[in-house]
Length: 87
Image (tube, rainbow, N blue to C red):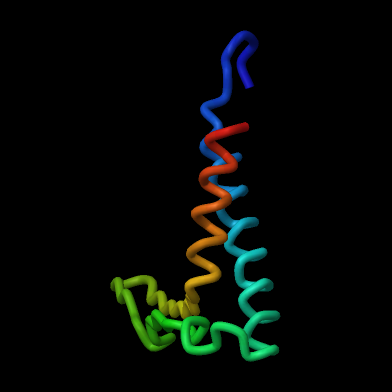
């Protein structure tokens, strides 16, 4: 890092959003285990199958991703974002 330059805080913001989302997910799992707010804690799944390919003449790439988001994850991420704005 150059001397005398301030960091923008983007990395810190992303990190706090991810930590908030993880903590929100853990709280959501705990609440779902005891049956509290169970209908609201069912995950919405975003799925890109692993047989998605990008094919060049010399290289073939395949990738996939599965994201499971609940209301608790979303609220935790929002909380992490708000925390990053205060710090």
